[in-house]
Image 1 (tube, rainbow, N blue to C red):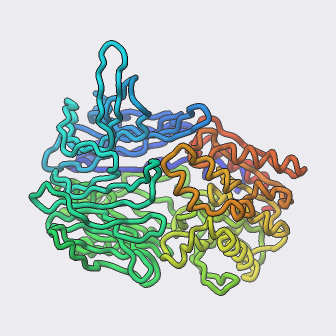
Image 2: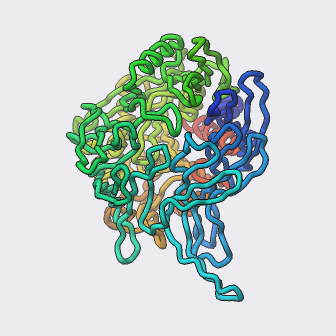
Amino acid sequence: MPLDVAAKLFGARESNWGAKLSPSGKQMLFLGSGPGSRTELDLQNVATGDISTLTFSTGNPDKLDWCEFASESRIICEFSGSRADGSQIYDYSRLVTLTTEGKDIKPLGTKATAYDAYERQYDGEVVDWLPDQPGSVLIARNYVPSVDMGETGLTDTREGLAVDRVDLATLKATPIEPPDGRASEYLSDDHGWIRIVGLQQTLTSGQLTGVTEFRFRPRGSNKWETLGEYDETSGEGFWPVAVDDQSDSVYGLQRLNGRDALYLAKLDGSVSRKVIAQNDTVDIDGVVRLARGMPVIGYKYTDDRTHVVYFDPDYRKLADSLSAALPNDPLVYFQSASADRNTLLVHASSDRDAGAYYLLDRNSRQMHPVLLSREPLENHALAPMKAVTYSAADGTPIPAFVTLAADAAAGPRPAVVLPHGGPSARDEWGFDWLAQFLAARGYVVIQPNYRGSSGYGADFAGNNAFRDWRTAMGDIEDAATYLVRQGLADPNRMAIVGWSYGGYAALESAVLHPERYKAVVAIAPVTDLNALKRDARGFTNARLTKQIIGSSDDARQGSPYQNAEKIVAPVLLVHGDLDDNVRIVHSERMADALHSNHREVDLLKFHGLDHQLDDSAARTEMLTRIGALLDKTIGH
């Protein structure tokens, strides 16, 4: 595929996503991409197919994250963005409500004043959609103390996360839970009762310890009792995910034989727990609902792809019949449902299909497509993705995915190693726009789930891929070796491309194995591990960040910026200047270090964009530059 065509096709953002049904099932809302980074909220009349745009975000800086029906006539949306404040960049999110006519837009968070002690980064989160009380929701809202030293002398000492019942038409707020500076989250029974609170433990300095204490209320009681703790640094403990009102229990994740299992813990004071689901090779990921506020109907886990196991035999049978009806799109998930659960919104996709939404009428058993996830890719042949396993140097089996065009000629070809970000994340089988772009240009692509990736249990995660960077880099190098040994890759025509931690991995791999890679692309990369620790200064997670990254000496050895002279291949760096996840200074300093060592480097900056570079024009330009570099260095 010609470079300009491929860059435009795969650089375009999703056409439609986040689709939801109204309680009646007669309306559907979804987010759609406009030019550049614009996102629109669209409402469709299911019967007529008529679509109207209710509101939009420009993406600079605000962007629409999600929208959901709170009732048949009102919607709640979350906007988020990043903001520069001197040398600091921080992200924020805001909840708003509007009518299904796109009118009467109102903020749902607590009201900011000129006298606030600090900025509200996150103003609220819906805790309970109150399906029995349409028009109101329970919102966990952040309260910030404020003092007016002037004429009014008004003082508000409330601070921390509270729960309020909010009438969406009038914004009248009724306190349910008082503000608590330690509270980080609440779980309800989906009928208006808060049953669980998470309390973050902090040091006297205000620094987070990484430990969250969970408390619960027995049914009919106002007294909090101990449920358990969870330590995010070790992954040990019990993490509640959903209250089951019918059984007076809570679903939660906890390790069993080194992997996360799904438990059901009673909330009657006994706190007795039983195992609901476990897997011998991977973690259980969480629970599944038809829609927010509806009961849990199953759980999910991911090996090479995500699987859903349904508790209810009716949904199990329905899911099986849908998979049979859509054999070319085996990833079939229930995305939303009407209140009576007779109308379902289904999404189906595969590695070679970005997916489509279907409306299913369970009464008539009729189903028809309503939205395409990526309209420009319709009728374009995409490359199959194959799950493989290779052996690391020490014999550890490493899962990975190889993407190669179906009509590719046999024999070695130019190849791209594509490590994922995170590092506590993983790749899985399904559509991947970056891998598909590279495959469309003729490359064989491998995506290794190196050690440090999530989902494969505690032993595989190790001490995390920052502290264990040598192990992670070794696994990534062994992925390149695998392609060569399989006769898929020309060892003299290999490149490495990565985003975030994957960008770090691309640069560090070029430091450790300069003879291997002829080109390096690092998108929003971490380039200096010690700088990443310094970036956290002034935030409550500074201590945790230091623990995650490890000692200064080891971090210096594993930092591409500190070893830039060892890189010999041409480097393309890509970064948004509002990236609060990895600041753009990482790429700027890396570019300077490479220039100082007389290396070939290009830095592509995008103004007003964050870590995701969620802009079609920007992504198209980025893919064009990546394609040109790879054409020049390894061909296609």
